[in-house]
Image (cartoon, rainbow, N blue to C red; front, side, top):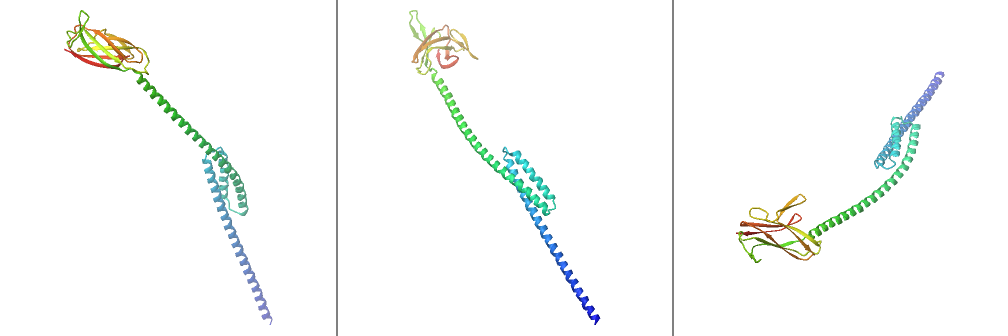
Length: 291
């Protein structure tokens, strides 16, 4: 009977111990599961915060690239985020540390938001100023083009007036004559008989030319390339001219007929050349032949 009671007590004790063991195992499993869940949650929060930090740093990089007056302040705040990110990556990620990191990031994020608003305002202001500057440059460029066009037109007009104001020498003619003792002149085509070359030309009417005395240098060259007449020499800049005679004409913007006799002696037959110069510039020429 006593053995039976003893067995029953032993069984009861074993049952109680088994129940306690099962309870302990269950509690340990729950604690392990809760710790793993908490650890996973902390790691997830760490990864999320790390991504947010990286995104904020990227925003700073973009803002700094705009090169506004706040670039130095932006760079300083960016460095704070970089340091916080480095500390976060080194941390074990416990709950207390995560709260500290989140608080620091929230503070830096508020500062970043304020700086970004100010930086955006500066960028808009710079854009406006750039647009105004570009508009001013366009106006200045248009003004310069108009000015250059006017200058070119004035230069062309001046050149046109200069060209138009030059006198035209027309109808240059030369006739060889024999001078009689009576004073009568007889045309001849024989060099041996000629003792006077009668040279005539016309200065055309020009209303925009300057009136006054006009001096021309007439050059007559015989068949042997000799200059007839006075054979005087005059320089015009780098040019030197040997001429037969000089003729000064009073010009009053109307057509003027000019004539001049050039005495010659013992000339030989051949082709003769007559050139008229205005201050060293050839303005008319002709030739004639004597037997």
